[in-house]
Length: 426
Image (cartoon, rainbow, N blue to C red; front, top):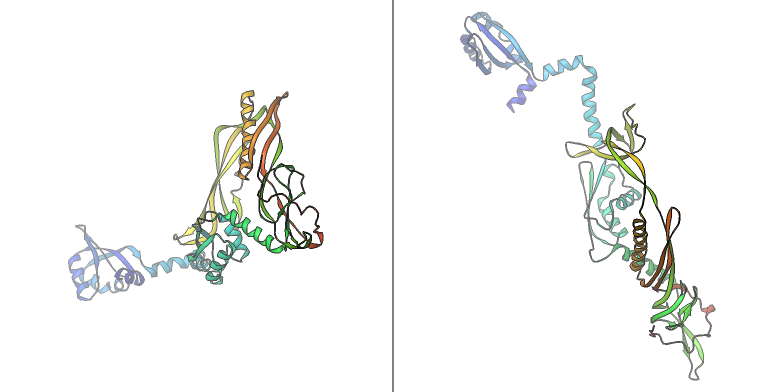
């Protein structure tokens, strides 16, 4: 506090020498002139005193026949005096402070914590659609409504908390670890589709021979060993109601549901060129500094990368004031790494391995969809500058898609004497 008062009043460092410097200091004390930081250099003394007391030394200097010289000036009065000569700087400092205070009223950064299935980009897009984006005034954010909207939009999110630190919006969420986001979405879509249908059939979505059928709802129209074409009726959603004499007098309608697998096949045709190009890096790099304002990147004039072929690695950081106020300014560097394109040639064994790798990816993708691979009948043929893999995969694949059923389209044909709903076979 004492230092602050001294700075506001202004003070000077003086040098005192002459006939009796000691008497000079004693008289200053008698006249209630505060001296501090005194140092003895033999022939002279140095000390500090306030600017106001400095102008009271004239009488004491004459009495003690000493001489006084000002060595340093410090404090607000001297700072103001300097600023009068630097009007642009004097105007710039308060303008800068006012600008920073104004910018601190807005959101310039967003952090998301705890999200796994719901990515940062998805959350940012949702916030943008909800009217929360970079540059929004902090007072315009209804945090409680925003938290509720996130939970409603993403069923996998069970808990949400939002807070503002400086100019940064922090969204903390917790996901239900037992629910997969994709499964939840498919379940919701299936439920909506089911609700819109008063009744539905199951029809084939591929050609093949029925391998097994397990009916949960509806009347099966095929059995194990039946050959089906795409679009054929598999399970009817019209359940016949028979009279005492065995005739059909009415129908009850439902959404047909069954697990149906068919034997089918899939043709595969893959190609692998024997020649290929790879990037041979020379080790030369060029770093280009840049800054970004409002999403637009600027580099220094005349600073360009003159390499013919190169990769870019961008490193960017946001300007943060006092570790709290994030401003919409970014700085960083673009590292250009030069490379030379080199044409190379695959050995036949290597090319065959690459073809089989592509085939394995197709098989893995099918297995993820519940398809069983029975046999693989493929062969590789060689041309002048490429190899081809062609063949057939024998599969046991899930079959059946829902198709809306209207009572007017229901016929009694094919319903009576239908096969057993739980018929399985090879």
